[in-house]
Image (spheres, rainbow, N blue to C red):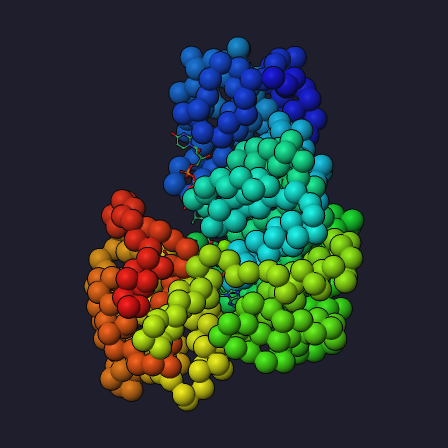
Length: 483
Ligand SMILES: CC(=O)N[C@H]1[C@@H](OP(=O)(O)OP(=O)(O)OC[C@H]2O[C@@H](n3ccc(=O)[nH]c3=O)[C@H](O)[C@@H]2O)O[C@H](CO)[C@@H](O)[C@@H]1O[C@H](C)C(=O)N[C@@H](C)C(=O)N[C@H](CCC(=O)O)C(=O)O
Ligand SMILES: Nc1ncnc2c1ncn2[C@@H]1O[C@H](COP(=O)(O)OP(=O)(O)OP(=O)(O)O)[C@@H](O)[C@H]1O
Ligand SMILES: N[C@H](CCC[C@H](N)C(=O)O)C(=O)O
Ligand SMILES: [Mg+2]
């Protein structure tokens, strides 16, 4: 329970109609979760407007309602609080409700099109290697110290975020890292959080179904940096063309990392192999268990963030060599027949390019690359032909298949992908909608020295078809066909 007046002190209020001398039993943003004494926050969503449920709450026992627009009829038993932006208010109220856990640990947020899960997870791992308890909010899984808490989102809603951060603090966690998706930034899911630092990885095409333009997508990510406090660090990728844009309006202390130019934190790739890379961080050489330039970027960001957090450089350098790849990110499986299969979450054109470049760098002309890839249904359609085109350009054989078709027909998605292929591309391509069959075919074609890339689903252990998640795990399937 908390006094309504205390909760309201956390948000800018336009007007309060009714008494603020009440005890609140719960803060909710879903009318279906209202119980006696709840504070309901009416948020305008992508499907419905939370305001439409206000009249239905008449006899629900709701104590107070935060909204942008007052309903026509006001109940005397309910306190109405008018605010300029309910989504922002919800973020602040969620923090206040859980006693501001983000101020009781050091929280680092990671945004960018690709590399968020990898970077956030490795910062969490680094904190643990430094001997601290830590927490993680990521696409793959949330962690409260060592306890895994399953997730279905990259960045959860504000009440879930704060509930998890609260549990981290109560568990003794001193550090937490989290992914900040563009959806979350745009929908103010992170409003009210106190960040110790923010990291930008890169910006390439994705999610245009939601943001419509690259500019709007960029602005969503930038808003995370715009809102960082002056005490925080803002760490950006100097090699990305939008890297500097992220820092334009931030109050935070600005830092850069790079693999190519002068920067505060410089990473260099010395030698790349399928099982690791020799690289250096600010001139100090380290063997890491990761492959590909994109991972060298992620690791340089992790090194930089670790130093900016204040962990001792010598210990950080030793720990860099102990970090291991994240589930479903460039996860390699070696066949006794002499070929290798790599399961990777590349589901954007840029990620497909990066992961194939990384493989080609190591394989050279000694082996062929066979790529199995699809694209998700009910997601950015524009990326489909580009993903197929880039995959065909960089592979010897290409098998187009199904990802999560969701409510679309797999054959339609594959057709959209095929549109991106020229004559040369079509010659080397097979389309096999059944993903299991596609992987089996790749394994049957593979010769010793070849590398199969199975892209798009990484850690996912399901295939979502018409609202139902069927068990499907690329890693399990590939293991079956290695022998
Ligand atoms: C499209 C989208 O982003 N939707 C997110 C959004 O929900 P919404 O705006 O669609 O909600 P809505 O259904 O319109 O409802 C609006 C409001 O009315 C309320 N409501 C609704 C019904 C009712 O009876 N009563 C009621 O009060 C809802 O609780 C909500 O507060 O806000 C919700 C709470 O934060 C999110 O859970 C939800 O994510 C959905 C499940 C989703 O799939 N989102 C994806 C696209 C997403 O966010 N992805 C990114 C990562 C992408 C990546 O990794 O690349 C992520 O961060 O996970
Ligand atoms: N720094 C990077 N630059 C470009 N591509 C990357 C980078 N890091 C990872 N990738 C590619 O993107 C895929 C997804 O990586 P990761 O899960 O770390 O990103 P993410 O930003 O969390 O993605 P999502 O938005 O889906 O949660 C990887 O499997 C890899 O193919
Ligand atoms: N979290 C992202 C990644 C999707 C990965 C891919 N497997 C797909 O289903 O499109 C999304 O929901 O757009
Ligand atoms: Mg992620």
